Image (cartoon, rainbow, N blue to C red; front, side, top):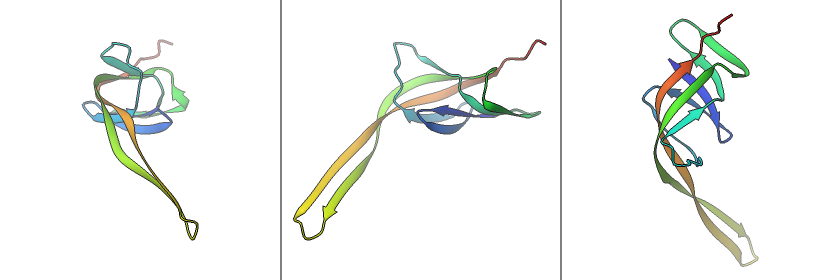
Length: 108
């Protein structure tokens, strides 16, 4: 079983037990993060596609730590102008472990 979730303007394919790094999330003391924006869910029987999201699906993740990503260099150079600038940036990421992919059954 796997799911495709959306967070931080990006989409991630996740399975139970996976460790993923997403853009920094505000973790207010809790050790559990719930993603409600599930775009697609595939289980043993079927593939469920949201329009745009699946309202009955959730992904539970465990907060592991906050880390810094790799350094990205922005270098600007203007020829013949004696002008150059170099800047570096390291994005803060949140490392998570996927605990469970939940799908609530419809009672209709």
